[in-house]
Image 1 (cartoon, rainbow, N blue to C red):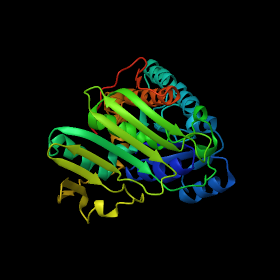
Image 2: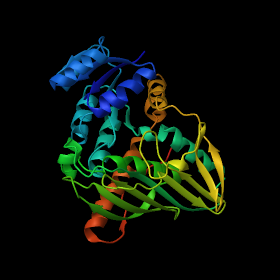
Image 3: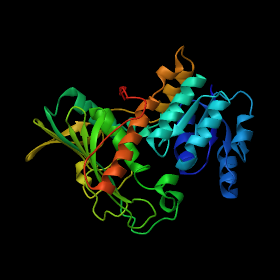
Length: 349
């Protein structure tokens, strides 16, 4: 059983990493957090783990096999570099960094140290996404026309969390939060992105809270990405159109939607629609904890970096897309994506 240290016990650490790692059979050996209420929560949730005030203390715990960086996005690079310097494999929550150059430098540092590094792009393992991926790869949609991916909410007043109050350079805003997931899913579905046109707005937060991206993949396929905290009527979570019909999914997990009938019943994720006719799409069995099962298997393999569930070069490419989106929004025109130092090869999800 791998012994894991967790850096941060907020939404990411407590809500995603700890439950999924434990479900995968990993042992949580230590947690870094300082806020009194989070210290108390971690102690109650994980009575066998040591709750420590800083990363240095965590790295001093005996026999750590893995450290998960689940701190605020602006701290990811600094914390991951400390873990690499200690010689311990690291999972970095998305985004890998706040911009592509920093991310590429971190990937190169891991390579030089010979220490495995991967990125928590957990939404690749969502059952709804795996169902859509199977549908696309099976050819059931025919020749693909266009993909739309949405993550829209109605939060007209800021919640006051660091994601809303910090600048983009510090890791705030929807591009480095929800859009990171959507662009990663677009790349898994259709390959690397060549160009971006973007419209960004900050209506209630310090960084952007309303986003539209028009992506053109290297093979020419168009993907439109929408993310918003101020959408009173959210659109369908996915709409993927082709010559043989359109896949429509109303929501993802517990997210609300204005199209609840697009989800379907038990054992179903969305519909394959052909005009007035629609056919239920059978849900694919998927488990988000498989991310950590694959991490554990990679650590036990002869080539742990190669076996990691997410190639960190893919995360650098996603950041390059987001960098191009910022440049596009500022200039008001299409911008070419330039991925620094590495070109991703998209692994099967």
